[in-house]
Image (tube, rainbow, N blue to C red; front, side, top):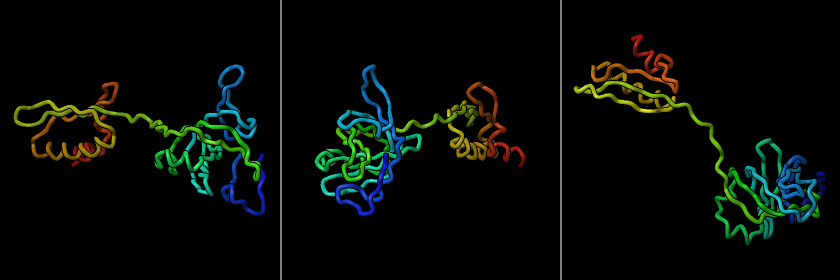
Length: 196
């Protein structure tokens, strides 16, 4: 349930537009459960993970606007005393955080929020980048060079290797994927050199 007032109050952030689908995890009768924040009763201890999209100071309170991975918006309240003992970069805009706190409803706006007790940054899981094996012979003793690189790194280093090959310092250049298949021609730096 979200309502707005025509006159902003001094105790809540202005332009608060919080949806009803922001979800929090709590300990239910049968273990951990998840529910929209607005359905939880006041004083229930909850946990949520979200990205901070805005941070506003009003009086002795820091209001954190949150966005969950599914796009739902939420609100958290961090007392200034707790904010002073928490590193500022932990609640900076853009930080992905895990919040533990108490579900509350703001009395003036009837907006559900989390009264933060604990806030810690959570590293965002990054997709694993595909790697390739760059293999070539180099130098007067035909030393075998092998390096595992990402696609972008192969693009950068491949042009250097091909310049060495043009001068006769490198040969038998090949790029293998994870299955051991030769994919040298998939890279522009090698295809351009062979066309020339």
